[in-house]
Image 1 (tube, chains in turn red, cyan):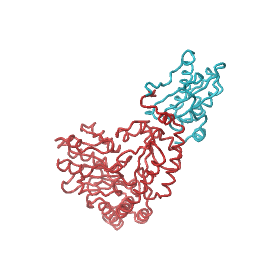
Image 2 (tube, chains in turn cyan, purple):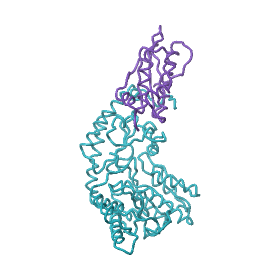
Image 3 (tube, one colour):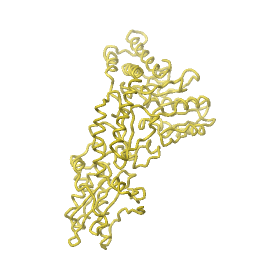
Image 4 (cartoon, helix red, strand yellow):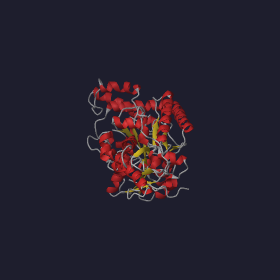
Length: 398
Length: 141
């Protein structure tokens, strides 16, 4: 149930890819023979499939190695191309590191970056964005859906504001595309990053949408070479991966409505069961503006890693420091204003296409059991039950 | 992360879980760590006033599996020892016994702190000099 981290390959995607891993091995850039033409035709079809899912045209899709590359390419490429116009970029604090660290690097090169805060529900305040914009602002980069708490930012409003102010709008759509409706025109998106392996496609392939009309967005390539992808991304195309991404996008578009209904129902069942059987269950982030398959909850007074240890046959992830190399709890949860203790107690569920209702029942029952057991062990839970205000204890931080 | 079998055993079957009467003169309480850090251990000992032998030990821990195992092991080890002998328990002994990886050494340090804090509390109550103070409830309202 960790489908925000990655998803299994859909068998239909694999089937579409197989010929391109075996008999159809041409280089899509080979113009002089049928091997190349076949590969190019397959890539063109995939470009259409990706474009269709987000309301774009095929020429606006650039294939990359994944969303991290797409984010790097969009932000660095726009920053470089538009540096005469300004040096200010706006993003927000709960972005993925692929956006945050890219922005940090640009700061070293003299760009100014504003990191907007989020409200307790995980969403940005549009007024904060308005206030942050100035005449040097060239780019706003704000994700559609968050990878930890699944909250969906008001992208259409952000896009509208950006276009009114003549500022380009990039969005990291890696968690949202294929899960919820995304339309680059209705949402005034100028650049959008997406990835194959989050939507039941293969790893190592992604795409960047770059708007060609109203306005025509230009991006400096960050990888030099043979001038593939209209000069924006050199490198021989990953034909099987691209075919897989295209097929994954096609399936996601066709099945989105039914899948949304099914996953929302499963997610709500999971939540209802947990909240009905346990006290001090805290849902992190807006439930109203949220991906259908996401649930992020804190089982307060129980530490996340100990919880994962008790459910080690279930794949979920925790915002607890003990599960990360840095020993810092999730920066996303901290940005919501949660105390470190609540962040340490969090579990992220990402329900996906291949999760069943029986699995949800199993996970809920097992979690309830383990949380109860660990709370028997928890001095904090005992103190709270005895009416002691643990926030007034002078803890010895170590 | 792979846990050692001993950590898993203590996690699945924690020893000496519970609470002793904090107000009793024979009981020393050590409460160490902080919720913000993701680790809080409470270790309590009941000491025979004649022999200074720790006759009972209880713990509760909020923390990762290694923290739970470290404190569970600590209660096993202090039982039957005099307070002076228990002061000799080192975090490195716990690391060795549980095969804790480097990233979990702080769990063993916390367990050692908890032992010392519990003994310190008992000494303070009984007019025996010295010891690391336990965390105190400053405003129990």
